[in-house]
Image (cartoon, rainbow, N blue to C red):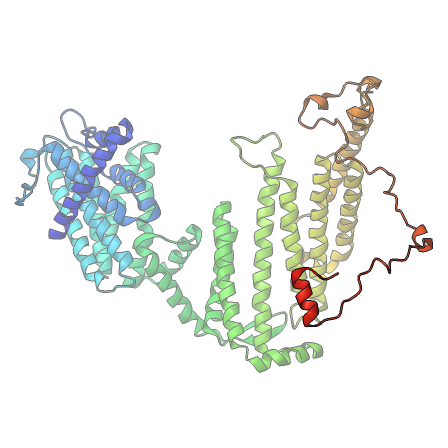
Length: 617
């Protein structure tokens, strides 16, 4: 309780700060806060009080963190709203210096906001428990605090149910309060692993919500039906732990249909499915593929192979494209993990000897198992891309729908990319070790390659049609017919194995129709005679400086790309600088200069003295 009071005080402080920023931000935030503090609309008749418990809970959770699984943010919101409600109702728990506990009694039920006060108390304790559940994965000691907060949430819910038994509260609110209490009680018993008590509480909650859904309009029943769907996996899990072995198959189907369960059951259900498959895997010792039996000794591979059929069945039953995509991704992820486990088992010497084994046409069992898992991965990738291609083809058929709100529509280029990936996967299938001598397998892959090549050529032709390249499109249509005829000629005994492929006959019919449309469009396009330009509008590409005497209308002269002169200018020949050679210098006779040259005087003391006084001649 002290922890909740502390959270409430901190929430109140943040709420006050939020109020200050609210005034600065504008009237919108203030209006939202005032709207929360307004008296909720009474749902009953006359003076009876009513409270849309499930609607208030769901809207608050979606708007304040739970859309992204942020329970701490939702807990802070509940604390702030509690403080605002207490302030509005003048129902404060003492003052800043002393805490004085108060309880909501039936005499105070003049306003349905008192019921909302207790509901927010329960939601705050529940969100704190869910926050601790996330943290308990790494800190197991927090599980004790989790159970304490869940008990506190159940206590507040029971108090809410007790107050709703008053004659002042309408019947719908009473039922919703009972369902809410049963839901929280079931979650508490679920965490305590008291399966029978948890199942009884969840069943009671489910029954009440089903009755409420049937009593109101379809729009009002949506929330109740959603809550029933959330509870159903918990009920089946409790039934399984009580002893109902048939519940495990239903749980697995629920998980596959939804692409994964969220909330309280997620971790337990994943662990249960893994445990069940592990038990079944203990009896699985071998697998047969392409006429060869291979022992399976790796547990992770056994578990994957056992769940493969269930996942493929769920993919086949899935109606929404998003669900199919999620299941495909899950299957590919599990397959990659299994392949990695097999690679780790391959010893280095086996990997070195693999090349010689391939040359002799024989591979080891572990290598053949690796080829089988790789075949599953590539085949699943092909099915996923083919599913995406079908959805894109449906979008292309709706040509009347134009681009709206900047949304990008499907184009033939998108399909070309998908078929390129499919053809690459088929090429990888032909390179699998251990299947080099399997002629029927290689023949099937060859026929599949021709089918997807035909579809790839068809959409390449469609992309050429969009840019009015009629001759290229016509040649590609002929290539499509060539591939399709080869498929029909080679299919023969393999038709049963090629049932999942796209229909080639339908493609031939579509190509023939497109060819006629193409020829008509080409003829109409050829009849469009281009407008002949007048001589005054014809430009010869010369700049303005070279056609000053010729008049023509050139709009480029008033643009930023006006062609006035050639720039940079072209090179032009110019004369070189002359070179001068002095040829007469070699024939000139210079006069003698011996008499002009000063003779060197004798050195000595006399000469030195004469030099000093200037007597040297």
